[in-house]
Length: 128
Image (cartoon, rainbow, N blue to C red; front, top):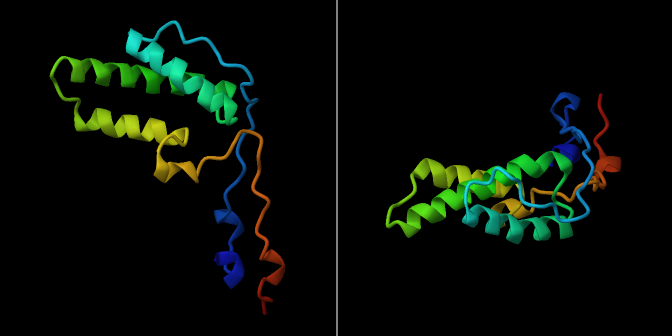
């Protein structure tokens, strides 16, 4: 909308950021994952993320933390306890960083894909 209105400021335009190589084969679970639930979650999520080009070499630790937190939450539920609100919020944030929640899915782009730009840029209002 700012581009159409002619109010785009270069200092507020999102940069593309650093490009890290995409992971093209499903990596083995990290050796520090704390329990079987965490490993199982890695084995479930990693193929999905690789297939959709949503996993780069820099994301492996973050995926590990997501799976680790998942494992801890499952252990708590299995023990008849409830995870803290902070744990659930942290899990939601980590899952969102991979586009694993409906509200976040449209905000995550596959590794190596760039936004084509604003198709309305050529219609920018002339400045005085």
